[in-house]
Amino acid sequence: MKKQHYPFELQKLPYSYDALIPFLNEETLYIHHNKHQRNYVDQLNKALKDYPEYHQLSLEEMLIQPAVIQEPIRETVIVNAGGVYNHQLYFKSMQPHGFCLPTGALFDAINQSFGDYYKFQKAVLDTSMSLIGSGYLNLVKTEKREVKLILSKNQETPLSEHLLPLITLDLWEHAYYLQYQNRKNDYVQNWIRYINWKEAELRFGK
Ligand SMILES: [Fe+2]
Image (cartoon, rainbow, N blue to C red; front, side, top):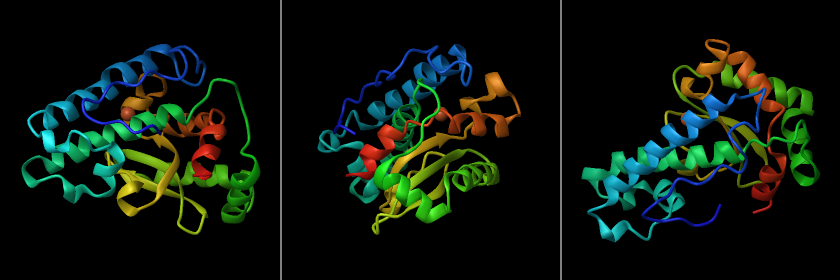
């Protein structure tokens, strides 16, 4: 991810709002990106506006070491920086070109950790369904270059645990409710077919 700093901008989607149909309809994607993600960008800029000492910090720098932000604004900044980071990665974690599989070193790491791709898919579904409340499912790379699935609550990120997320799945109701209502199970299963493994492989190689 390219280094960004204040003032943060709403990144364009890497595809059009109707590109993920039938998995996600246009209204769901538009509101999620143009309303929800935009709000995190705006709130982050608002919180940082009067603190020029933080204007060169990237999202990653703030999220890896929240203590660099002083107390009165720390929580607001970290929640909104997490909201921007998580949404940027979520939208990059999907691609409109249909089902694809991971390849190379990442494919090997997935097989090593989960057994095979079928078991990986089952773990994605089971772990996602185990989240109570709002958050994200992340496939992360560990320091040993292994992969594992972890949940992040609300707008927390794996960066605070010094883990690099390769892909992330937004499990907040706003991500799917307009189209799927209470069928979170279907949303998660359909997401697996739209994973952007090329993005995940790039990040795994870092
Ligand atoms: Fe979201």
